[in-house]
Length: 352
Ligand SMILES: Cc1ncc(COP(=O)(O)O)c(C=O)c1O
Image 1 (cartoon, rainbow, N blue to C red):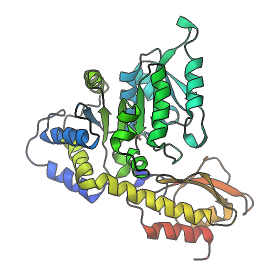
Image 2 (cartoon, rainbow, N blue to C red):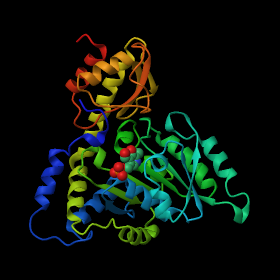
Image 3 (cartoon, rainbow, N blue to C red):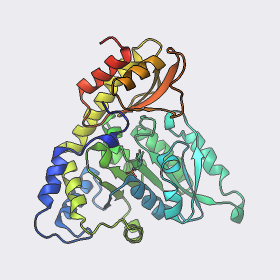
Image 4 (cartoon, rainbow, N blue to C red):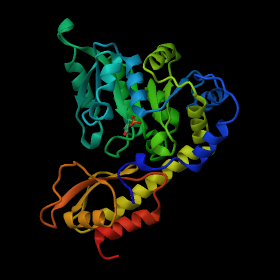
């Protein structure tokens, strides 16, 4: 019953089998392995983007920071939501990799920027000539840090604001597949057709061991990415093990099945919690994370019973009246079972 993060899940058997299968004989290093050619072709097919360039890195932070570095000048502003992972959880990597860009934070409920708030933030930046940072780029996270999802139309509306100012758009898709399967749009509609220039396309949180693809829809930006990836220490010599993971992930719809399952487990948990007396959702459950508040006594029973998850924010006291609600983040993954969800709900209810 570990709902702390989808990062707590193991890698899927298919991914581990692919890594083992790749561990035979010799393969050319640094992304010249034949599996990488197949990955590139598969990503181009999935995204209906024959020109796209595709690179693999091992962490989402590297994917995001390197993507930002090719989209903005060091004196550019990166417009992102106040709760964006690049703002709250990457230890300044985007600022570091871009050579000093400034993150400018945009408001919006449930970790979703609104087009108006984005427009205001962009309009306000760079008005004093040389004295200001200049307008650089926009970064959108999908699925968001609060478990919500932007539809393709919502992505397009944000991208239209960015393009109105001539700014490129990055998407942090550490949970792109969870967002994708939550709606009816195609991968192309969720990204380049909506105006996304570069996508960090996550694998690790959705069942891989450690691999993320960076999909660059405008190939003119690709060479700079290659140089920055190497210079930043993220070009793997035994790259075949990254390629093998991504190839298995995208084969036969595995990526989609894993995300559908994680989202379904989150929906089951969300419905169960929302039905508890006095409980409420802090954010709508649209992907694989549940943000909800319920009575302190329910948390005590859950933790005492062996459940793992985070109170969100962390600093809510466990001492206090039983009936007071505390907020939590509970994340489902490909490996969460219905039995896990029902066992947690039983502990929270305290009578199963
Ligand atoms: C939305 C989002 N983007 C990026 C990342 C970064 O991934 P990593 O921890 O692999 O650097 C995370 C990780 O939690 C995330 O939640």
